[in-house]
Image (cartoon, rainbow, N blue to C red; front, top):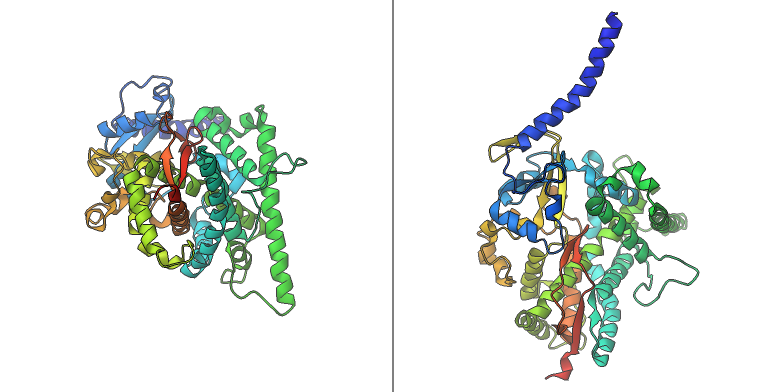
Length: 505
């Protein structure tokens, strides 16, 4: 009898514990401000909080400029942090947190790579991989960006000669993917000029795009698919699995070939003493005890960098070129800056030393990233209570870090936040603002390890393109609308009108 009573009590404790915890969490979150119109079952979902154009987000941050609760359903409240004061404790680690379960939809692809690993594993991998972005390495990557953009420039030249709008989205995605493969892995894929062979149903770029589509679908369009079992039973799972297998096979092949090359050189008495690229860094990385990364760990990091190293850079570059096409006065100032820089040279090649002299371009890049932030929304799970604006959110609460709203918060950036104004980032103005008011690459210890690489790449692209061409919007075409995926890309491919600078003098 006593045993039966014990079992009943244990069962009740097992069931009531999570329930009481959920109720406490819900009660705390219920004290936060909440946008009106929340449906008892759908929450704010029918209001389209993540609809293309982000109108709901813009309207909401104007009314709730610090924190508010977004309800994704009847039992899915998500406190949204939208102000430097409320975001800072999460980013700087004052309040401990980890990646939220929403990122689980990416784990099949990038595993426990730097983007998703936590704790000691993340610290170890971050330390081992940081050397791949040392200034000397970044200097060596600059000629590669110049070489890759040459192919894009040839395409733009043909577009200008034919007086046809150019698909800038496609061109930049291919170009950035070319750069990351050549720099990170010393792998020349010719992805900008060659189509997949007819015998192949998929290439690396299309495989990555397929995986991105599925992640977006699971996170934003059909959240039932976040359940692994339901996802595996879905009709399109076979397509997902095929793309996943392709990227893993590709990365595994590169890792094993590089391991073999490094090993053979060592056996021949001609060891590689200094990593030549990111892949060398992975293969040669050693802990204090002499152990290195496993093949699985290296594959995870390769997949992480092949994705993160091209998608965000391409998207940020696309929006920058759009804003420069829309606002020719800023385009002209950057072109003048580039022309002065290259005035006495026989080549248009941009060198590593040139980056610091492209001052106005740097302002425009930052403003473009503020206007449309590639990583618009992150989410974290609290590992300890967080008291914000008098409300204590308990451990285990998932919170959203809405960088798009942060970058359009009128209490931070003023009522003209929708105006493209590079002068916002002049040092004398930016020094008066909180460092956490602008975080296109996140901030704190877990900021993007490759942010300087991405900025340098963008500067090469923009300088080389504007040196030869004038960009303008296609007459009669509406402005592109940003849509929320893993990155904030245009809803439709962005076409721009291309005109050779030498056609008008």
